[in-house]
Image (cartoon, rainbow, N blue to C red):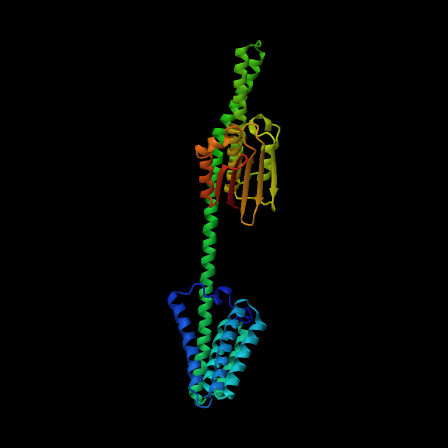
Length: 396
């Protein structure tokens, strides 16, 4: 036995009831009920302590010891040595008082219980003296011969130590199980990160390169068209090429955002909102007069939650551009304790509320609602007194 084992507490896993089977839990409660039932029975059947006030005192003794025992179990679980020793000594003092008042059986039961639980739950450096005092008092107060007393004392001491070893073995098993679960979670996360990195490489090699090449060709086409003499056909073609170039640029930007999300390198959501709503292209089909308001303590979000917030904002702004062009937009992002809340509100436009209400808010918002529900969140969208509102809440 090393000095650390003598001076150290049993682990919290050992002192808790986690890991006990249902049969052992029922057995433990049965033993407790049997002990306190025996205390009550011996109190009411004692001829020397018969009578109203004596029975009241006996009930008070049993109830007080029950509370002290519960306190002792809680204090030892919290590894508080001196309060634990005080509660244990109070129980042994109550046993001595019961013996002096004419209740020998409750006194012997209390001393035996203190001896066993001390060995089971206290550091051995403190448990051994407490057990020695409790068993010494049991031996002196008992009426057994020396051989019976010695066998009883040895059996109680062995029982307490076996319970301690059993609890430590159970605690060790719980710790190993927790470590195994953590290792499996880490392995699963590592595998997920590797797969996401592989998908990001594939997207970069195929889609990003393709969009970049399209941008180069569209820019070259724009330059060639601008060299031609002005005319209706030339201006129409140039307008289409410029629009296609803009869509390709936006697609490339969103592809890069998706790649960053897959690699876990996304910029903060609030920065994305400011760039999206207050950038130089706001009036170019995004949302005129947009405002962003961020509340709460800012913190990094999970990639899934961050991506959902970004996609909902983009979809809501697309609906504003389609159904309420020129409407003012207000976006509010709030960081809560365990989730993030997003609200996109516009000032309304012609036909906006009726069209989207009839169409079920569009398939885009339906997809965003499904995305939010997959994360355990919610998305609500609908017309209000003035304009249209989209509200998103997802765990973060």
